Image (cartoon, helix red, strand yellow):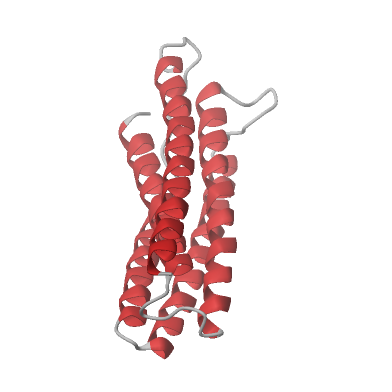
Length: 188
């Protein structure tokens, strides 16, 4: 039985890593296209909206709270684990809220994704951050499932594969945002 559990764990982790590598390649392609497009004559530089700075802080804090939640689970502090999973969800939803605030700030600055007033730079920004938001939504769905299963005491110190996989994916989308934020901060 123990061997079967280890094979299952290894298989699911490998599948997750393959998915994350695929997502990384997609964002590498998008950011590479952004870099190449900067040579266009109609390229317009822009300032990142202030809401993106706050959303970055929130996503980092959400990763820290997920780490504490997992450590709590592994130490047998189930209630504390639930508390920090809930905090992770709140911080993740706050991240989404501030991302949309950032989009509103871009619109107020005259940076549109489509239409006659749009430009290549802002269109790339919207597409790349929008694609990341889709991955955050997937992460929130995963997080809600982890919370539900944790509340049901389906994760234990010995059996926490779903919790671990959810944690890995959440940290991945968090790290992905940090990369994108730094990319847009330094390459405008």
